[in-house]
Length: 231
Image (cartoon, rainbow, N blue to C red; front, side, top):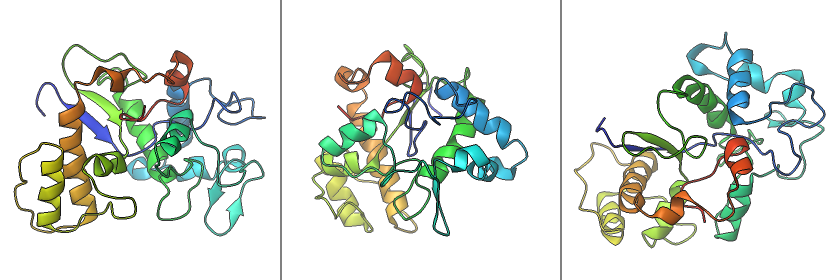
């Protein structure tokens, strides 16, 4: 990895907190901030292999706030699920975020978010994670990404954000000022999302307003985090 690397993770590093002043209202062990949440997930899932989070999902108190497979919806899961402040801002930008408390459906990112929290817990103190940590003067830093932001910046219209061929990928890369890509053995939307979003991060990493979004208070930064590129 190059010394100064901006690492984008397509997952939610935290859960909704601000709307209820708690991750898990009515539970005395509800963590006070995101880092405490990561530690809680790690503790409950310590015996889950491969950094899995099944034990957390099935925890009696946690499950009351989740929508799970098999029609299981916790008593505190409301509507389509609570959103973080950054996800409300995403909606205002015309995006379609899904609650991290929803673990059902193709658009859900709740499962990867919970397993990702175990990774973030291990990286704490080793690699800065924005906005929970200050942006370093040099070296790597991890941010949360939403790949559709890069797709919109490349001029790809809503509902057509998935690229599955070389020509379409090069057109999108050109739109954000990037050179054509090196050919891939196989094209799917996972690979093209990663390439396009990485190119977008490289093109926008120096924009100071993306590191200091107006709506992101210190309290939000430490409890819910923020998605890079959301104003």
